[in-house]
Amino acid sequence: MKIIKNIIKELKYWPTKLAIISFLVLLTISSFLTYRIYKIEYSKELLQVKEETSDVKNQLESMINNSLNVVKIIAFITEKNLDETDFESISKSLLEKNKYIDATQIVKDHTIYKTFPLKGNESTIGYNINADSLNKKILFEAIKQEKVFFEGPIKLIQGGEGIIGRQPIFKNNKFWGFAAVIVRTDNFLKTINLNNSGSSTLFDYQIVQKNNVLNEAKFFKNNTDFSTGIINKSYLPSGNWYLYVKLKEPQYLNKAIEFFISSILLSLIISIYLRKLSQEPIKLEALIKKKTSDLEKANKQLQTRAKELGEANKELEHFAYIISHDLQEPLRMITSFLTQIEKKYNDVLDEKGKKYIFFAVDGAKRMKKIILDILEFSRAGKYIDEKESIDLNDIMKEIKGFYENEYPNGKFNYENLPTIVSYRSPIFQIFHNLVSNAFKYSKENLNPEINIKVVNQSKKDITFAVQDNGIGIEKEYLEKIFVLFQRLQSNEEIKGSGIGLAIVKKIVESLNGTIWVESEKDFGSTFYFKIPK
Image (cartoon, rainbow, N blue to C red; front, side, top):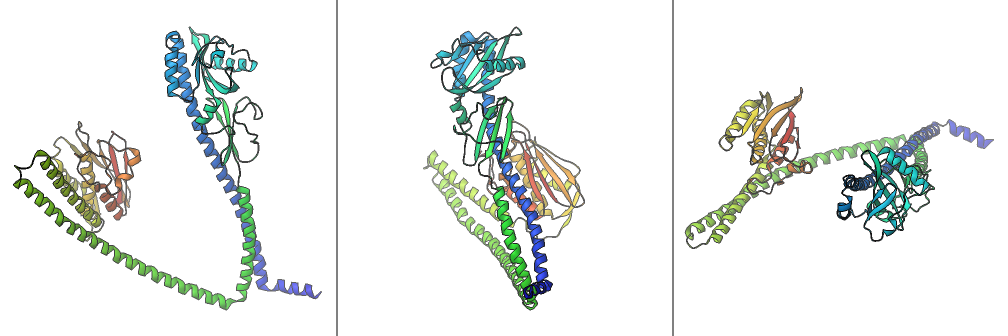
């Protein structure tokens, strides 16, 4: 009786009530989260199986499509009555290009009368493919649909197993026979990077004919049950197969159980901890004060780090300026002395010596240009002047004047551009560098044409497009061109250090904008950049 009274008394004690309520609430939340984890992990593993199915299916379809091309070529030469003269030579060429195809055949009516290579396949000549009752149905479907039909895996007359693709041949609108390709099972599996067991580290696989079931003829020698677990089934119409992929060791249930057990323990610990906290308000208040003090210290440390970072940036800028300035002096000396040597010993030097001096001087000049570009890049995005109202049409007129003499046949078009409020110098540099880049990478036999226009604007920002008809950029390099010293052209006639677009990107981003490019090789490029108005 006394024990019961103590239990009732404890239950009436409010910290205990808080602990029980907390535990029940946390347990409810944990149950919901466990269910969500169960669903998410199941979906992730199912997606993993689907992706693997897609990869294997793509490999299969690639092999089948190549086989389709081969069998259609054999059918074509037969329809054109070229099989007597060209079958062997064309088949040899096709098999050399498609290593996984073992043989080609021509079937007249339902009897095999030509095969390549003949060696090893002699037993197929004269064989009636209509002898098997199952074959009759498959052949009937192929003739009816007038398209290639794959059969397999089946035992081959010449020995072993493989798949056969047959294309019906019609002459004068009447069925004449078939063109066929044979792919042995071993070669077929090599093509899709699988072994005879149809098993990898993570997955089990199986391929069966559409009209068959999993316990009938199949490609892989495994007894995996594809009716349970995380599986994906996909139909390959070109081969009339079903592809099954199953995850070997799904973990979604284990992860959900592990989380649920952990969450129960955590809920219990939290409930006990809450009860203890509710009994010690003074300690809790002290803890809050301590955490507040720690946060204040952390904020001060962050402020200190920010200040140190700012000072470090200033030192780096100063260092870049000093290095750039000090490196130019020895380059000037090298260029000057080499030039003097060339003048003084011009009569003594042969053509090779003069060429060496020219290369050395040219290299020094290019090094100086790189140093100046580095200095310019370090300064980009830092402005000391005030924002002003800028008529972009005036900017375009100024830029156009730079290129009228160098590219007299070039076209430089711009619409009636708006007036924006920004920093004049960086805005000028953005357009100047993009236009310079467009002229520089124009096609040799085509007059350059550059169009500048506004493609979108809102109350807060405006988007410009700089379009050219130049050599274009391959898709894989669209991001790379904005990296320092990245030049996609090795042509020495195109001058530059590969820093212009990096400077443009840095300036645009310093104005809280973004820049990107759309291009296609040999079809020009369009650079877009969006900046605040």
